[in-house]
Image (cartoon, rainbow, N blue to C red; front, side, top):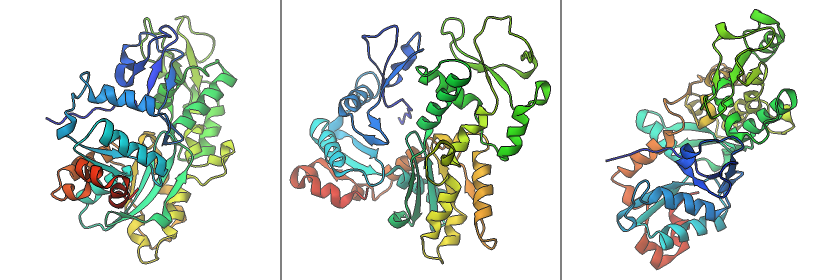
Length: 378
């Protein structure tokens, strides 16, 4: 029986129950998630707080969820590109010595996504994985399931930065929400989109009344009668004057597309880095010329940020503009870009050669960290 769970990799404390710590999907038990305090094991994409990570894993592997029998269980676990060797060593020790897993495969998430893509497209030899997640965005070319290290690009823009920027804009313009990460993250996911024509949308966002088709009213949750925020239907919006309903309303206009725009122009908020389309083209241009057309026609978008409406179309149109006309450009958005690498991991675990890829507990006990360094290409 295969069960797929997507849970938050963190712990929470709420304002109301200060002393109690909630782990992973216990978030659903918090009656009032306003002012929720996050305790994260990862900072800037690297695992730095092992105590929190252990507690999340204990919960995940324990009786509340999977009841893992470690001695008979293999695990595939992802980590960022060029991960620090000290973090890799700690990971080996915890998985083998503390939990005592039967066998471990440590791998980059992009390698799993590439495996999934090549399984669906067996005639293709190359693809470029764009993984835009919580802490940063990686752009990684794969050729026959081997990553081309010389062309890997990391952009320090991810979902966390976008949520924080939206919090700042709303706090400056309307309502102090700097403590409301959880709520504003939901607002971002519900209302933000990627503009296909930034300046045109900016002009629309300045218009008054009915003509302003960008403007939207978002009803904030009060966690008693309204458990989750939602967008007011257009016909119920009060365009002039105040609402009589007593709901707390955020009115959002250019914020809806100006926040995701940071993925395309990080310099808008002072981050001197390339946007995603430019970085894709730059990465491919670092590869041998005869390989380049194969990458342009196999661009794969993964990670939560690729779910913004309009994201795929904008990446396509900008890459198309930056690419020689005789090259085909194709940008693929999988059905579920968040679990795409998990699906690749599932396929790898069913492969006949899976046993050759892992390090077993016996291997580790005999050879220590060096066997992991040899086997795992991080």
